[in-house]
Image 1 (spheres, rainbow over the protein chains, first blue to last red):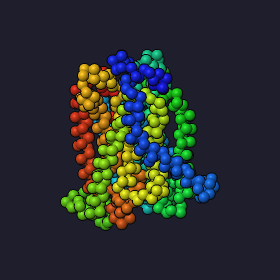
Image 2 (cartoon, rainbow over the protein chains, first blue to last red; image 1 turned 90 degrees about the horizontal axis):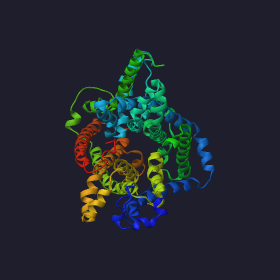
Image 3 (tube, helix red, strand yellow; image 1 turned 135 degrees about the horizontal axis):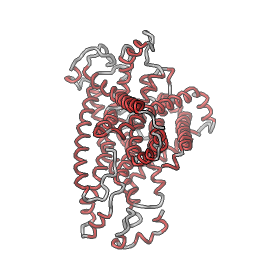
Length: 294
Length: 281
């Protein structure tokens, strides 16, 4: 914005600008645009424009009634999708926050090893990771065996095909996206703040709530988005580990995308998924008050 | 006001136990992938442990469709990494080094693909390809993957080069170096660790991606798509063999690059005011 306000500053010879430490060099105004153009055009043509045309397509033939048709036809699936995504996000917070906290504040010399273990799942393809969950949860597999011997499951009961299997795998698959942003925000935390709180007679719990948790909210926010959004749009976990009772929105799109005639409704469904997620994100940001912090 | 010491000790121990359980949760499926590459399944599905066998490892190319798909995936990953790294790095550089009109909007367009469900990205791109009658295959897969990778590269590069002292470039120019020499001797070494990290991330994302790629692949099969198509007829042990091999290669590669990168960064640390500025690797 400063550039727009004072363009003449940027035409000065290089030398006179030497003391400026704003990171802005004395270059011509179009240099940044030359750098942006290739990638920017790519995003404009293959990301922004398709989204617009998807929105337009979703209104074809029936107009807004496409949306009401799609919503009334799939209400159970839509609600189920958001319930699954919410539960797996909450589970990812419950598992991920303490993990990120321990790595950031108590990791010591093992910090990098712990981080490597968190990133390790990315080195095995998503689909294969999910297949490994199928192995783990298979009838007569280790998890079912343990749950049967403890008495949570009957000897005849399995896990595959149940909502639990789908939610557990969703949680697993996106957990690193929860841990890493929280870790980054906790890592930046100035520990002198906690010392100061202790000096001023704050209890550790209060110091955690008022300082650690508060300062890690941006990380928690980012982690929640990075977990909730892919979970809400997923069809792999439910397809591989679920059953007819666990169908999610993504599966409906996946099953029908080859059929030309279904397109307007299908576009409406995907556009609605995006819109609902956007609304969720905005509400969540308000609740968390992230605008002030971030 | 402060809880008694024994309570705090219990708290500390249970925090550690919980964290270790979390790591186990992340680690176990990977371990299962590796272990089941040594299985000899009774039927066509490698889901239940039968007995130890090296048959998968001695005959890794038994299913040519799987091998071809893996090679196809690697080709795509190379092309996507090359294109996305260049485009994303340029954008990241522009975002860090310059102030310009509409910078906020560009930043938003860069972040947006990361905050959108893959199925929406993939499906909207597919409707574009269908509407202009473009048949799906290698090129559309590359286009789709570069689309989301550019954002990752730009974001990574941006985070890692923020806070560098760009006056070094001006010093170099003032001292008579050509702009090409300045780029090669100053700019490139400065941004190299960030660019390498971004390139590795892109390569991994490209191999990993399923949803967007699947929607825009047509009849061409990447490794994940081939597994998806096979899953109703067979899930052979070779899937685990290839995945384990890729895992081992990536871990070795990551360690080499991170260790090498650290050494490089330390060497450059004397040159720059703030060479760290990064946590992720």
